[in-house]
Image 1 (spheres, rainbow, N blue to C red):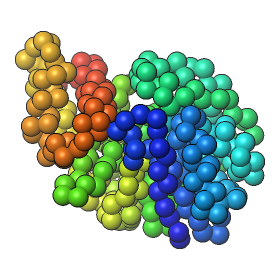
Image 2 (cartoon, rainbow, N blue to C red):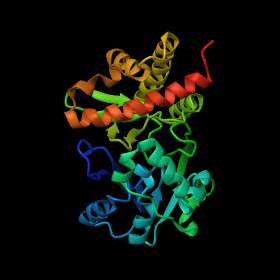
Image 3 (cartoon, helix red, strand yellow):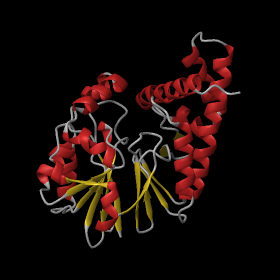
Length: 293
C-alpha cells in the first residue's frame, strides 16, 4: 500500500507542518481527514500533483474543523467519494451551525484562520456502524471527542488524536495529550487500551507524522495521560492562583514527553503553548468534576 502524509499549509506562523491528510492508495483511494476549509485549495492542488483524480472514501477520525472543516469543498471536487464518520457526528456535518459556534468558543481567532464549515449532503456520509459493510475496519475511540474513530488500513493505524499529538524531531520527539474541554479521561484511557488490543501497527498521527510501533506509542500516551492527571490534580489542591500557568510550568519541567518543546522555533512554541493550555483546561474541568479521593 502506498501511504503518504500530505501536509496542508496554514496561513499562520508555526503551522507549516501541523495539519495534514493521509493518502492511502491500494485497490481504492482513501483520504484520512481533509483539514480546514480555508486551506482546501492547497490540499486539492497537492493531490492533483500526485496524480489523484479519484477518491473513493474519506475517513474522518472526528469532525473538529482542523480535520473535517473542508469536507464539503473536498466532496465537491471528488463527487464520487463518500465520507465515513461517527453516526453521532452526521447531524453536525449536515447542519454545522453548532459545530462552528463551538469551534469559535474553543479556538478563538484560530477558528477564523481555519475557516467556517459548510453543510454536507446527508447522502455523501456513511455512519460508522455501516462502514464495515464497505470493507472499512475501524475502532470507536472516544476521549478527545465523543465522536472519535480510529481506522486500520492494512498495517497502518490512523488514530487521529486518540494517541495524542506527535512530532519526530532531529534529536528528541514530542508527544502531548489532545485533551481540550470537555475531557472524558476514562473513555480516553479506555480507547488507548482498545487500540493496544490490536496488532502492533505503524502509527499514523493527524498531527503530525508516523511512528513504527503503535504499541510503544500508545503505552507512552497512556502513561502521559495519567501523569498529567496526577500533576494537575496536585496543583489544583494547592490553590487557584495562576493555576493554568503553574500547571504548564510543572508539566514542562516533569513530563519528558514534551521536553522537545525547548527545541521548537518561537512560532511553534507559541502554537504549542496555546494547545498545551487547552489540554490543561480539559484536565482542570475534569478534575473539578471528578476529584481524587
